[in-house]
Length: 192
Image 1 (cartoon, rainbow, N blue to C red):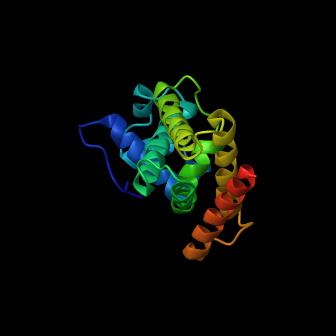
Image 2 (image 1 turned 45 degrees about the horizontal axis):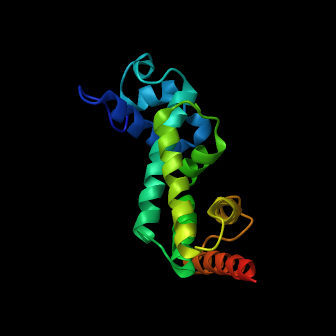
Image 3 (image 1 turned 90 degrees about the vertical axis):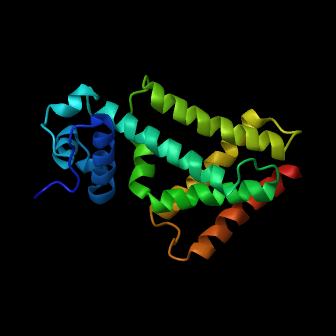
């Protein structure tokens, strides 16, 4: 079977990442290996080792791409949310990202990764800081260190409930309403 896209003298690292994302989205995380990525990119089985020491290093690079894509999606929902309603819009964007890119979302949060990978660490820190900043703007009298992870846990849990089929994701408007409603309910409860 010919490779969908093949590498031809250029940026090998980008070609490998593109191939990894294709393998991941088409065949799932279990199919993601250095050999499969090399085959998809049209390079020798040894070529990925120029950039990735092992599968964990490749997964870390893929996860970093996912975190950057997620940050872009959240920023597009609202670049500087400062109200609970705008925070709910960001929560909806988070769950939508999970539903639109389920394999990537699972890799980002469910696969062991190289914890020393600077790119992955920087990408996760950016998302974490973005959420803390939102909470600090929306709830200036709260402790963002306590509230931000609680909100993230709620929204992240909703994303996985949809991904795992515990909640029905087929009606996008219903998903948006449920996520917004859950965030509003929890934030309303925290005000009392």
